[in-house]
Image 1 (cartoon, helix red, strand yellow):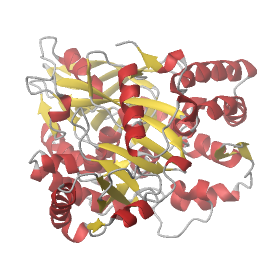
Image 2: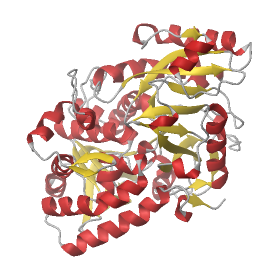
Image 3: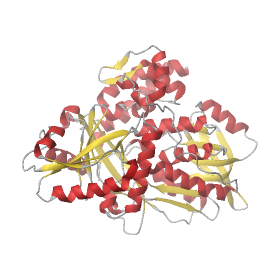
Image 4: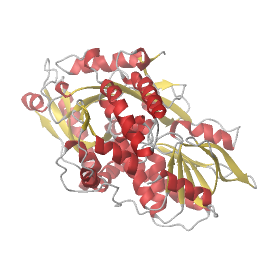
Length: 522
């Protein structure tokens, strides 16, 4: 996956690509993998870095959606459970089983949630990760030693999947490139080209060089997440917006707040959402919220009321109440939800994906979630083949192994997310740790630049490793050394290093709990 080679191919292309995909999040990358695996010619442009937006800011769960079962959306739950099972097989280095405990504080909660989880098990069928069961009070405390015990009657345990979202995005980009797709980050689509009133390609700019790009394609796929309406407007200024934006935030706490290997799931909070406390990379991720917003941003910030909400609920269900000093990082993400009229309650809006084709042939896909990214991609490419007028081919991704696939146990904790690539990173023989509070090594940074198209300090610390989300302050301290290594690999000068450190520091302050930059005004 070499950026320069992809750009060279794009500039030299004589024939239109079958598909030009705009957007390098879960949906766009999944579509690129699907299309390339069918043998189509594919180019993908991402205006920032892969998974820069929503796709790196999830709760880190691959799940069927217990809340959707409660809403009666059985078809979505069934689809998600099937896809969860496939993803555990296609990317076992990134996706694994995690046990969840629902603590019960009333006599009726055990039977009520227990029966619901048995239905969940039944829907998963052979792709289930493990059976749910009732827990006594002692068993609940054994599984979650720090759970609030006052009025605790017991619990219900069930199984779902956990993953590393932006690592999966990078591996999908590598997989697509390995199948022949041409993938470019930091390349922004600036407009659409048309022939006989039909979309025939895109105009774009390489944000690194400033060079303009003209790409011809038989079908343009709009997979820009929260920004799909902006690209639809470039196609037709009279088009009505279809996306409602909802914000979810998470706080990250030290492992001591949830020392076991099980997660806590609170099935219903004051705003109607499910709340999780999830062990992840030796920390605890707590969230999320569901706040309707009118503004869209690549770097959203938590609202004070969201922060208060998550902190209050964490204190309610944990014996140790977290303080601002305990919070290692705080991050926010925006969900693109397809509006259905009244968008005041975004928690009630379906997470089903939606595909529409404009009169000029622009194909737009939005909605959905990480768990169902593969099925979304299959549906998108099925439609795109008809729009493009190319041969319709069978989807190949149900059992397609994703870059890094391995069943082998990786002994080094920091190398486990790389799967089969761990051996190549190990061979670089530079295992020096960048920062004592981060597992990141010199070899990993070199690998990120050479093989994973990392271009900036942020790319490395936010998405190739997860330092920014796991410990924002430590990431700021690590930035100068990361910048120096990137500069060595890419041939940048001291001025570039200084600028990168300054830019990353300003961005990372927005993840430091208590810093004025971390909280937005309502």
